[in-house]
Image (cartoon, rainbow, N blue to C red; front, side):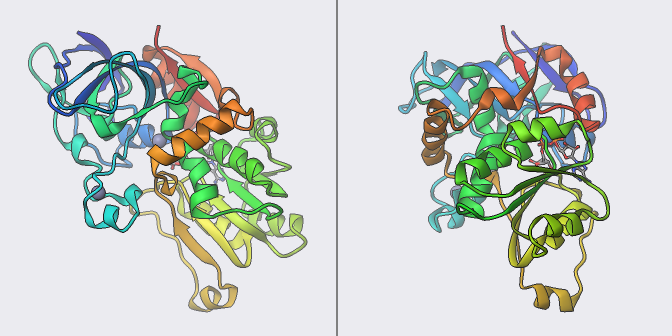
Length: 360
Ligand code: APR
Ligand code: ZN
Ligand code: ZN
């Protein structure tokens, strides 16, 4: 039996329970979690903004140690340190064969089957196929990525979502170049990772935007050169800070229609907005037909940082080892499994950076 934070039904609070995990079957790997980050997508799944089958063990940003492998597993062995991957690509579908594994048509398959059970036999679903809010989990081999040496196992959890997503948004999706101006809306774990990635790219100015004034100090520590308190004049303020033109790049890391619109309006003519946030299906964004033409801007979304994690995790690890990527700075609260509800409350109030469950 292992302890897990369980979402019994969408909209209900998480409960600490004991679950029964099977031994890994063919092609599966059992992992003892070292740490799991709290991402806004977990909160969105828990509240029903995003859909998930239930009862479900959430948590999709984790790292740990392999304890057992099933038949046919060859890429990892017991004792290996691994990062969990919530969008493992199949390698063979139409989009994988086009070289866009982050859009794999089969990456969500694991989340639709039960993987564990309560003592009474009730089947449990693994949140985004990962189920990191538990002491241990069982996942498909392709959902574990060997962790390169020199990266501490607790901070490595963040590589599995916030950092892969934020870094990839800047380097794979937007391809920010040195000297380009960047604005980032929303400074949670994802937005702060975008700031660090913009710093690595040599961007400037790097303008950070949030509704919470306390985020200013945090933002500057992650590479922001300016801080703007979000209001209905955000786009105008960003244009003022960029010589009246607007930023070359905007990154929306909130997941709301208003902030997508503000991000788009903050860019220069021909500028690019990369939407990283995930919003509600009924939250609309509007543009006039004339302004779409006149501003000639690009609006695109990015999924999991448009990353191929097997290639990008080693790149991120190299940045960590060289001191360019500061995982510790992203972690503002180290908590236990039973403190996830309080971390959700802080997140809903726009407080802090990443909360990280650290397993004893
Ligand atoms: N303008 C600017 N910032 C805002 C606004 C707004 N109108 N509304 C909220 N924010 C800020 C919050 O104050 C908070 O700092 O957005 C930030 C969101 O951070 P988190 O809740 O920690 O979310 P995070 O885990 O970083 O995820 C961001 O990416 O992966 C997606 O589903 C995820 O949509 C979410 C987004
Ligand atoms: Zn996430
Ligand atoms: Zn695929």
